[in-house]
Image (cartoon, rainbow, N blue to C red; front, side, top):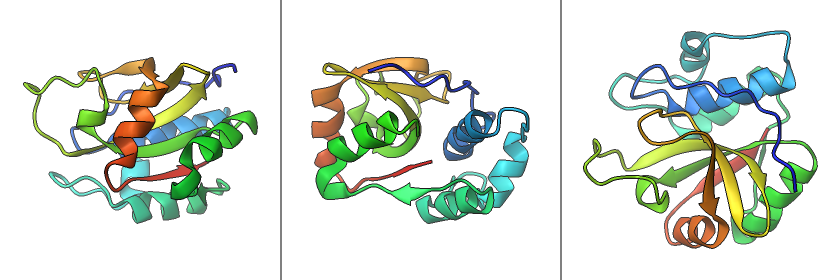
Length: 159
């Protein structure tokens, strides 16, 4: 499987990982029309010190005319693979401890949004908008990503 050619953006504040992911998806779908993270964060109802609710980010994606669809939690690996095969990145909301590159010494934030841009037999490839955590095309072993994710409440949607 190939990695989608999604442009990478770093999040601009500690609270805007989900808007940064949505901004990357927007740049991928509508390459000639760039939006600012500030505008996306407003549409996502992002609050300083609290971040965004998953449902608000999903509704913002729809308002931007992305064909956002929730992925089936009971069949998440297959749904992620189908989304990527259809050329659609997916926003995943995960607990930080699922990400093997997260260091416990970093500031504690339980939930974090990443953009899934590829997957093969061994790895899930993420654009992690937090420059202190990840960066573009971070490879996370597929079994670690999905097994860790499945042990916690989670959500994902294709864009």
